[in-house]
Length: 79
Image 1 (cartoon, rainbow, N blue to C red):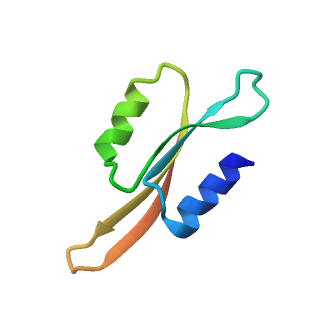
Image 2: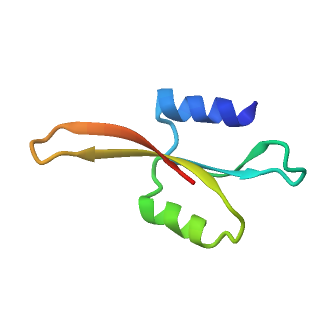
């Protein structure tokens, strides 16, 4: 399934910044609605979500540096 493959690539390869999924028209499965490459920002993600009237489910690969200089990578799930 494309959704599982895309999610695994994000999780293991960190090749996308975010994935946005929607429920298919027949309401039987999830479909990839949008994706952001690594150059996209959190603001880009929020803009896409805000401009979509239908419900969306998203996964975001969020990386940040702590005050002591340690780099962390987290995956956030947004419903």
